[in-house]
Length: 373
Image (cartoon, rainbow, N blue to C red; front, side, top):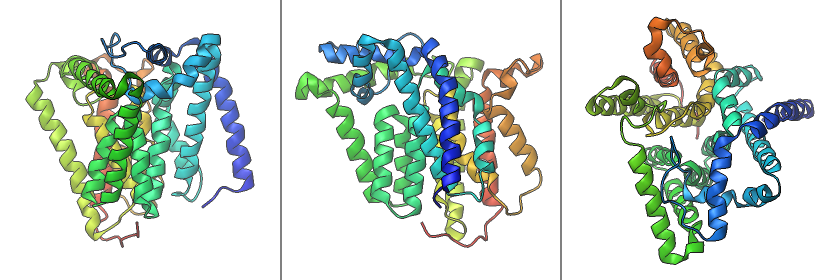
């Protein structure tokens, strides 16, 4: 369903207002973007890129060093203008995501509430000038194409998302599970070509070495217990949980996602639901997932909030609790001291609860008629 002219005007107007708010914030802060521009500048100068990780994190994948070159060139003249351009691109990708998600709903309410449920992660993205809205747009576009049987194009979107951030490539496991083999091939080809191709300024041999250097230093920085990440590996950092326990949790999360997908064999096949569920699972098992990664929970929220079918007992309470966590509402000084163990890994707990809600929703509706995909 396409937007009406009135809806389009409203969306553009809200987008302009939102850009007017987040662009000054990004110009004043925007540390992630500024940091990554140094890699693009080194690429322009032909200097080695992946000698050591930045403090407290890892570099974005190699393709982003090339992708940010236009912004690095602008930054030579004005860093503020480069930041503004990047923030504007993120706002445009967010708007694209909203337009695509609107097709799954009868009105705008699930979309608006879905945004509210990821409010702080989304705003954090613009404070740090990260790239989560770009990933969100690509992932929702992939779901839209799967819904209309365009698996090659869907795989291309996921391949591009993987080249930009890495962990979205986990969605290709879902493609393989559903036997979208052309989509898997397209995703791997796009991700591999963009990743290695971005480093070709160093030559054929040098490009491969640069990619391997990035993998090596990234793995060294993302071991269990090394980063306070908002994914399951962060439990080792925050609580000192042993690696086998965290690995068991990750396997349990993967098993729950697979179980929910399997239930569709005799029931509903909905691309936005499945892509939203798998994306959330990918965030939870990713070695690194900062709070703004939970912007990617938006598709799952749209699906849950747009359902008109009967829901199991306690569903609304679970939904409300998950929304309070993934929105970041309680992180504004509202946590009681005795809940420190939830506060430290707020978004991880929120992601786990949201995943449980998604699985419960699917299990509670086993007799729905299949939808074409």
